[in-house]
Image 1 (cartoon, rainbow, N blue to C red):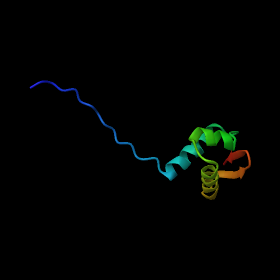
Image 2: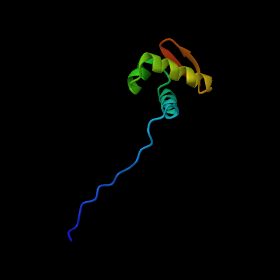
Image 3: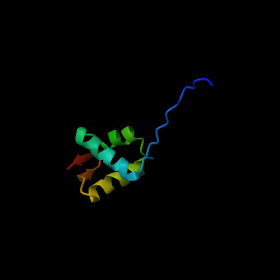
Image 4: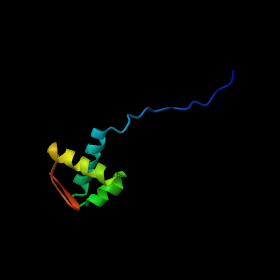
Length: 74
């Protein structure tokens, strides 16, 4: 019997909507002057996904306001 190379497999939890919201919140904490376009590019979101995510963050009290061009961190 020979020795076989083993391959480790790590299971990663799928990217849930809630997880993405916290990633966006963390991004806005680090980059408080980020524009909506910056967030859109960073997370590969469509405009409608971005608007939904920012409104969800605002409703949850994680960001203060959503303005055209910029999301302000709480």
